[in-house]
Image 1 (tube, one colour):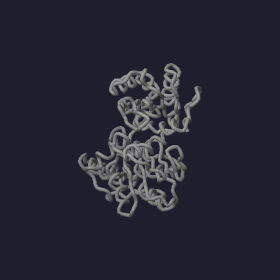
Image 2 (cartoon, helix red, strand yellow):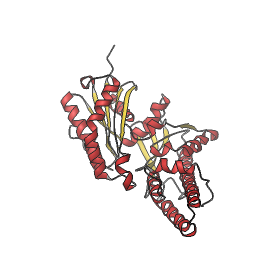
Image 3 (cartoon, rainbow, N blue to C red):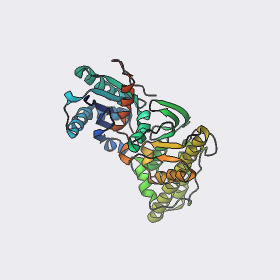
Image 4 (cartoon, one colour):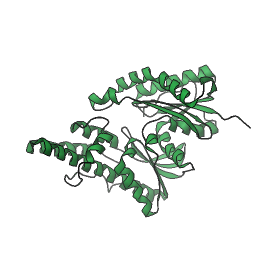
Length: 336
């Protein structure tokens, strides 16, 4: 019986330094993620230069931890997989450089895959079955994209944001409301004590095509909050207004995302929807998108640890490995 191939996956596309060990049959032995939230929190968003520096200091320790957790040695690794696109160029360069170095040192194949392919493949991993073809939504701090996913490595983009990503809208609104970073979890926590509908935020482009736009929503939050600050001085009332505005923002983004997913399913004729990315960790969105099941669609939602950035989802590289689609020794980081 042929010995299984063990892969080392590397992820440094934004502000998470991650490594994972998985096999060619889809088993994940370990997944280690080092968060940079403490590095970027005081800025209210990710600072690219600081992200790259943090990756540089944490990459090797994270890989060591992933190997130790999997109970394997570096010499046991038979292939290196790395997310080399898209993302912050400085951050990507760290992961790609380490991946190329290890590939040469170990004399094993190098596989470069898309971070977005990985987010969609996370649903494949979670479901334990073939999910293609399907409609796939990737919603995060850097991306809000709809795909007609015909295969693991065949994603046809059918909708994208024209300006800000959904996660960026969460981050910017959270910074404005002084709720903390990252914005998604901060908004969700505040929204638990608020009520949507007290404020009336727009649902940008909700009735138009498959593209998204969230910059106007961000502006609407700023305008609404300015009126609150001008009209209320009581700290308790300010707190409640902040919670209500967070709840309305969360509902507005969820409404738009779900509406676009429904339209994409209808437009492509697909019956299956896969969702991924950090925004998909939002509880209200997970609940709302699950309601599409009542309309006859299958909805696949990865567990929380596969929604946010991680290296386990680099297991999409197994599909490239099976097809002999190996990366060249001069593999580049591709930010877009």
